[in-house]
Image (tube, rainbow, N blue to C red; front, side, top):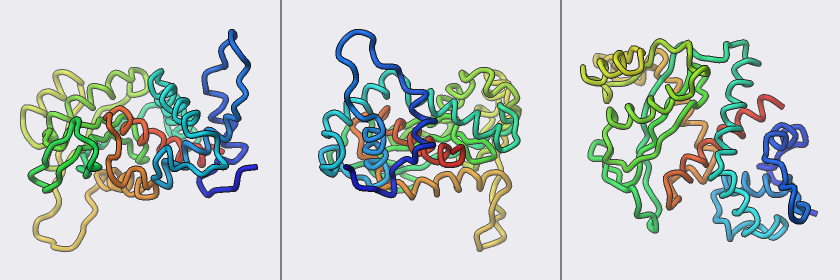
Length: 263
């Protein structure tokens, strides 16, 4: 019998996620692993920030848990669940399936000592590590995240992540405006948004005459999303060898946030 941890899913939350997991293969042995325990173990790693090998002994073997996590990462299961929950969360909030406004921002984070791939130095933030390029709606819900080396510029990252958002199709059919900060300023990015995306990228700046913190309209909502991630110790740094794994843990964090609202 497993202990109860704060990161555990409730039965209602489990049903929402389990209904969207791939079915067991018809051939071969029937699945004997308790998926509730596997999911709880995955969310334990996300929330507590431990290594896979550091999972408490009352969870399934760490090799089993990691195998499921990796399999659902590679076949796109986690991103598909995230996208379905994204639409459901907007609908239960009384919003349309597609937002009309988006906010883009980036966050540079340090990497673990053993992480060497896609690592760079952000001269503006004085951080050696990776950069999270994030696009959210006005509810703060993530549409797409892109992880790059920290030395990749905001405008270059914006083109990649916004192109990924555009590829979502009908789910972003109403988008007109993308709000950004001064790091995205420049006519080339504005023209690219008009010509390629048919979206207007508006740069809004903080008032320079005031020294205290002033929330900038719309832009503060992406900062709130970054704040949500502080609850998940696995996201305090980039501990992952592959950037795809880093992106997957962010989608997992958003899945946990949304499933708690939906259940």
